[in-house]
Length: 260
Image (tube, rainbow, N blue to C red; front, side):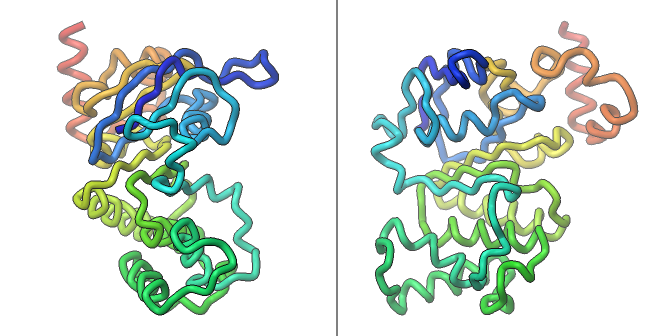
């Protein structure tokens, strides 16, 4: 269970990034964190991890999150990661073993077997000895997910994992995450493609510096809440129309509009 109580984040004590965020998230689940640019989506993940200063409480299974970080696997945005670093794919994935094994300790045969299995799950067994700099953006994102797999964390936080990757990699990642959810994991994903929300997430957290809504996707991902978060212009223009082509979403808009 993840709990945020009156969570607030300000930069330079002036710029409000998040204000008075309250929600309780029970797993297993794949939950999408959505909202416009600058809404505080990535900030929310970092605050829960206690890697940035914040006010309020963030609890994981009833304990302050900073005390249970070993139970969380975190993948930040690819743009913040140096994938030109001279390290092989299997070595990169093996970094996920360090919370359990410890830094600078030799990995055992079982650890490397776990690495090999994780690479098999994301379809990259044949790439294990390649430098990560040789991978495509989608392949590298799959490596980062494999690193989460070997960590065997109960909570997985992913920040914009589908930006700039191919459809094959996106499908493999989602299939892997669905399997992790089936194993009892709780997964939070910062996400921007609204057209995929209903397909990918069973719950959503909708932000715009404040909490707009949180709950089951079929109840929370509706026109009223989206307008509250993004403004009326979200439904105006070709770009907005193309973002909501799915039949279920259009039907929801019609039903919600009739109820308003």
